[in-house]
Figure 1 (tube, rainbow, N blue to C red):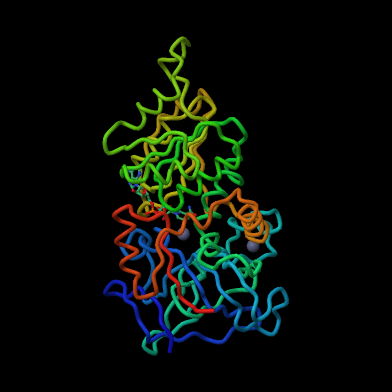
Figure 2 (figure 1 turned 60 degrees about the vertical axis):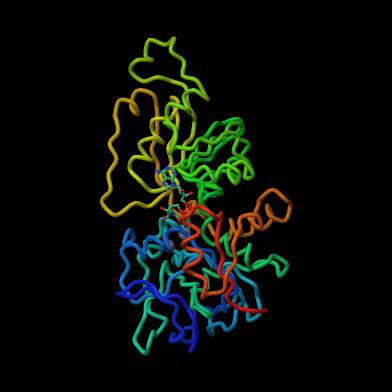
Length: 372
Ligand SMILES: NC(=O)c1ccc[n+]([C@@H]2O[C@H](COP(=O)([O-])OP(=O)(O)OC[C@H]3O[C@@H](n4cnc5c(N)ncnc54)[C@H](O)[C@@H]3O)[C@@H](O)[C@H]2O)c1
Ligand SMILES: [Zn+2]
Ligand SMILES: [Zn+2]
């Protein structure tokens, strides 16, 4: 029997009545050492992301390979790994063209490697890392050097790939661009540091909590707006002024940022992200609202001046390229990982991390699971 966080019909519970299967031929069993709590786990618990219980939560993890299936060649027991959430097939057209997030096998790929109180229990996001041991596909195990602390490495598994990847892989931000980042949580902070790495010269962080300003600036924001006190759209247009001289100004004013990122997952926030764009600007939807949520947009504001609305899943990551890249950026001092870990708890402290997240007290909370 082992311990983990289970999403059940009655909510969420810390259970020590879990078991995990042995790895299949192409699978890897990982002893999870550390796991970050991403809002997507919270969204399963509160119903925003529909998921069938019972399921073991957690999808941002790192650990040590415990056992490998007979056909596994790329990792061996004892290897330190970051776990990617994409159980992509590796051979389809999407995978072959460098877009594993478009692989049909990479979404809704649910299996039941666990039992909970003797009954089959599902994984979450093809991963499940709020548990002592988990089973993943070989392609999801990405070897990292032994000297990267697990509490920092685990964050690469979702928050870092998602945030930094949205900037570098999806938006492809160039030096000198300007940006607004709505939601300064685990994802937003990584978007901010991705923008800094990309050479953006103006990075405006926006949150409903004034307490997020310090973190936003530490990660590279040049400005911060407390959207609970002021109108973020008007304020951004003051910071990066509109040019009213153009005849087209009335139709579609220019000025504002060249990129904006919704790291909240709310229709009004995404609308704000569109409304702060300069001509030619691009809004990136990262946050995940309840299914069926729609946003209204003035089509002319897009069509006349080349504005773009794009979605981005998992930072459009190619995990076997991007995880080593994040490790290199971390080791060269360009990517902050240790600073993201502002709270560590054992599995039993899960609820404390959730509460701190809601109070805006953490950059990322990490569960320390295994011991070396
Ligand atoms: N697209 C993807 O692949 C992907 C991957 C990971 C997470 N996500 C989603 O990204 C979102 C953010 O996740 P996170 O882990 O950073 O969450 P988080 O809880 O750490 O941070 C959310 C932040 O948004 C702020 N916020 C809330 N309402 C706001 C508003 N109206 N305006 C401005 N700020 C507001 C909160 O105060 C908090 O600081 C979630 O919806 C999550 O499901 C998407
Ligand atoms: Zn996540
Ligand atoms: Zn594929």
